[in-house]
Structures are given as C-alpha cells and as structure tokens.
Image (cartoon, rainbow, N blue to C red; front, side, top):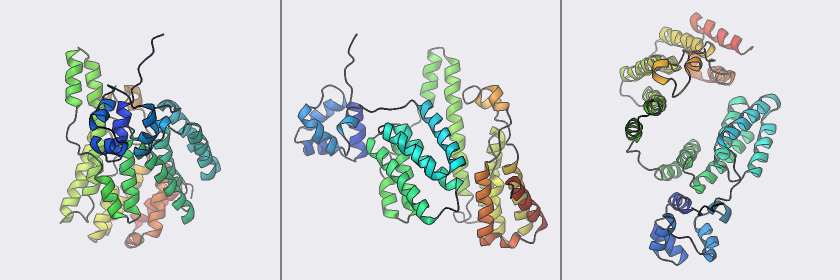
Length: 362
C-alpha cells in the first residue's frame, strides 16, 4: 500500500491567518526563518518534531489539531445528529438537547461541522423557548460564543469566516462595538466570484449539466443575500424617506415572487405604515403577513433551480409555511411591542391576530 505524504501546510497557513500573523511574525515567535514557514505552508518541508508544540502554542491550537488527527463526522451524519437533537429538544427541553450536543462534541472535539451546527443549535433553543429565564439565555449565548471562537481559532476554511461573523453579531448584541469592529476587520474583502470561471471550465470539458448546476446554486445563494440586503434597506432608520424604504419592500416582493421564494415583504411594511400613521395599510399588511406565515409558500421556480438546487418533483411540492416557533415569536412581539397598540382596535388586525393564535392552538 502506498503511503500518502502528510500535508499540513494549508492548516498552518489557515491557523496563522486566523491569528492575524504574517509568516515573518510566526517565524520570529519560533526562532526560525520566514522562508522555513513558507516552505511548511507549501508542503515543501515539515516542521521539526521539536517545533510542533511551540508551533501549536503560537497558533493557539494543539498538536492533534495541527496535524489533523481529529475524529470527525461526515456532514450528512452531523445533520442527522442535529435533527435528532432538535426533535429531542422539542420533546424534552433544552437541557436534554444540550446534554446530547455536549456528548457528541466530547466524542468528536475536532469536528468543525459539528461545532458550527452546534452553535446554531443554541439559536434553536432561544427560538423554541422564548420565555426562558435570562440566566438560561446568557448561558446559551456564552456556549454559542465558545463554539464559534473554537472555529475561529481552528482556521477551518469552511467555517472560519462564518464563525467570525457570528462572534461579531454576538458582540454587537452585547454592546461590545469595538470588539465587533475588530472581528469584522479580520474578514477579507469579497472581490472575486469564481462562478463564471467554473462554468467555462465545465463547458470546456463538455459538462453542461455541471455548469448549469453550479450557476443555479450560486444564483440561489445570491438571491437570499439580495433579499437579506433588501430587508436592511427596508428599515426606515436607514432611509431618508418612507418612499425609498417602500421601494425596497417592493423589490423584495418582486424578487421573491419571480424566484418562488418565501415572500415576507409584508412583515417589512408594517412598521413603515405604522410610523407614517397609516393604520389601515398596516393592518392589511399584517393580514397578508399572517396569511404568508400560516399558509404554504409558493413552489420554487423549476426553470431556475432544477436540478441544481432541487429536483423538479421536490421543487413542485408544497413546502410548509413558517414553523410554529417563528409564529410564536411574532405573537409575543405583538403582545410586548407598544408600536402595535395603534392596531388593536382595527377589525382587520384583530381577525388576523386571531388567525395567528389559532394556528398555534392558543
């Protein structure tokens, strides 16, 4: 059997960048030359065994992680475990779900996909149990932060940037704005999109199906990013006039409708109409929003996204509306947010609110 050469150069380079070190700075910390570090990262040579522990310390990791001796799980297995934990959480509560997650993390401490999905699981806890004590919410946020910090330090190519973004959002929510800015400055500027080059490569290889699939997947991701940006631009605090915020809502509706994606634009309209004192329009927007949350979403556009994103049969299937957790969060915000007070006497709003409660069995 042929023995494959060890390749740790990419791991060293990723961990070095995650620490914000240059090759020269890492070399100085180890008492070696910068060209030696460069050779490691190009897999032209390997660190001397006496340097492994100092190198791991300099990169804020351990030797096992450095040498990639990590027990890990395939992505499909990670998702299966996460679905099982989510169902366990639904039935028995967050404590049982977290215990199951901790057991998996203990068994696979170096699995980046597990850490990433585990961090998201703490958001699920808050979504499922919005009335939890403040101490529980703080514990979930701290646990999520620890997992994201571990990913940030690992230099995982797949999750490093997402981990930094998640940590920045947690810092903003905690009012730690300078820390958030420092984290965001670690992220590289997004300047180049390789999709067209990949498409041209597949076409040159006479692989039109692969080219189409790659373009469809990229389009799907970009559309969600576009909708996210339009949500931001629909915030009246960002715009000099209501008309500009309303235009962002209309663009959201048009893009979602053209692609067959969930249309939540009416949820963006409600605060805009309320701020302008247009109670009747706000009530109608709320009614449409509740209809969207409680009914099926439209079918994904087959001609745009099949089969790269979904099979024709899958895309045509009626997909479920928003889950009960999201609807419960909306109901809670209505009960607690004073801006909805102006709608309380409106019969359209009252009927929609009753429909929302009925969908939850309340």
